[in-house]
Image (cartoon, rainbow, N blue to C red; front, side):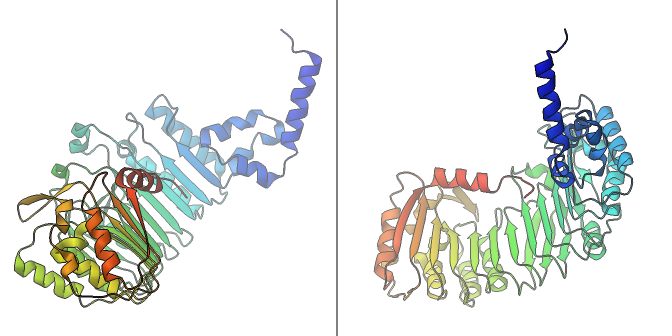
Length: 427
């Protein structure tokens, strides 16, 4: 059936308008998933080869019916680009039937192509597999450690479900002198030392905690980055100790030491003393008297002269709120404080107990008056119906010379907001 003349004219007019867009704007439109970008070649003769010169490639395995077709498409796509420079290259293969490790050498050739194209932003998002049998066989986690990683242009690297070793990190920091942003989500990190003179932002997180059976190899992580401005550690799996060495430029730190001890957390505080914004979530447990004393000694040697925003979990309530009161007293510029109380049970020294039990002791008996004159707002995040909140509010109103505004929020709402904030994205 032939298209009516009037409708055909409207379609041609629309095509003319699309073709009349500036090249830069059309290239921006082409920063779609690569498969869709290639399909725009049918719009008009002017669009036929434009996709081959885009500077932002978003290669996604979604929509391909087989691994073979996906590999064939990406190979053809990159061969068609010739020597066109790249601003960003994102590779996503999070389908159950397409695993990067199964064609590792090919994937590394793709990454090398991006690096040779002077890419500034590189993302490799591997497979999120719930099939534990595949995980044991090692067919899911993509391994980068045996390949060179060299570029004087790369500024941002985001990895998800990628195996990294200390050898890889050493080559990365030596071979990419412009690297400023490194984000690692659900990555296997073994025996790692993060040492860089240029890195400004480092984020390590596990969105879903893997079963510990896969992390029997316990190693240490050392972070020695004097240029680092922002540090986020959402969780560490398979790590025995975390050491922060030179963090002189650090302004913002968010650290969740799941699986560590209260003493481990106190050991890190000295390296965080210059930060302006600090979130410190530590395990809180029953401590033997000697351990608690040693932890106190580490904690009570630190002052936070620049701190304006502080978020703590309920570990700071143990021992008659001694840690909480000390931190408030030694943060003279503090403007906002958030206390996150959970309804989880913690284990330490083979004891289990509820987090709300932390304030069973009469903290109010501590004869310390705190002059936190710049503290204007306190948020207490707690499970619904937590009876210990009233005690904490009473402590703060009694101990602070100038009581701030106190806001109480439900834990469920706070958790949903944080999950949304920390979800994976490329921004």
